[in-house]
Length: 378
Image 1: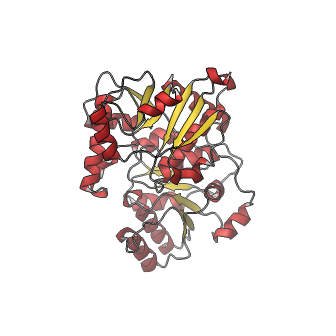
Image 2: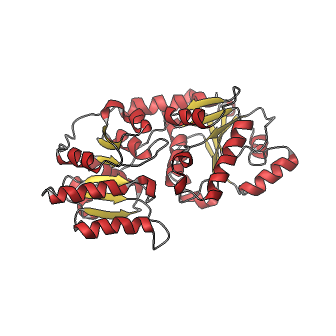
Image 3: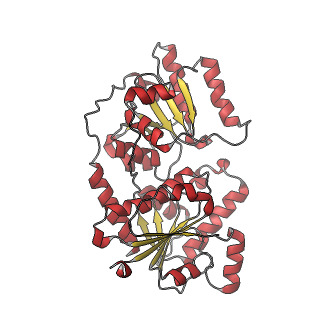
């Protein structure tokens, strides 16, 4: 029976620091568990050894794990041009008899393989905020995208907002099928700690809020910090837990800017930097929070919001098109630079009713997403 299954290859080759990409792919494999057994494909995961710890989180019954040394981008492109075949995946498809491969980031030449090679691009953030990227990184991103548009037949994007950006910034080939797959967060095996125990572990006050973003400038923590400062002046004390990987450079201007707001307004007891904590702890903190705040200036599809939906936690979010697509009328929105609006929301924000189901049921969302993803490959 296993030999007759559809064979789907996953390319697990991300920068270990890109938490969002790693969670996206891990969940893209784990979501297949929600398919009926007869529909479950055989999965072959080709992974960079540097990502071994994340591979260990994947539990799927029809899975083969293959450590693989992927070529560098520049070397892989040059070899592909010379050999007139996509060296990033060609031999993997042939040797492992794959029917489809995902996610393709590098598509230097057209493929004559029978397998369906499905590309993925998270977002087009560099068109909106080029100041957050080096000139070299912008050139690299644009080159990769143009090769995908020229050579690929199938492209997955995370939202209709991203699809609309492609139509806005690029001439889309009529032969390219663009699939919108709404990523969802799988929540399993949370730590068995009570509300009081997890709060005590991370020294958080009662009725705390959460932000779980990396410390990039476009994540826009600043607007929340300034809102908390204004609330404090009004006599409203707010506590917020902040998780996420700190920048490597010790003199990060962005981190310094955030600390300046804290020091100027005496917010050390209000704002708790928790750093990069175990994901189970992060999710449990989110689950028990008053609300999750997503103030980002740009998202392709927010993992944090998907976490909130799976955990039935309310969200206060910047009024980006993609956030509204993700939360619809169930989110509370503010303009991402409007401190006063965020102050007015947080000042009156109600305490949680933990018995209330805000979003569609977890099982329904997972099953729908599983079949949505499978349809891309078949």
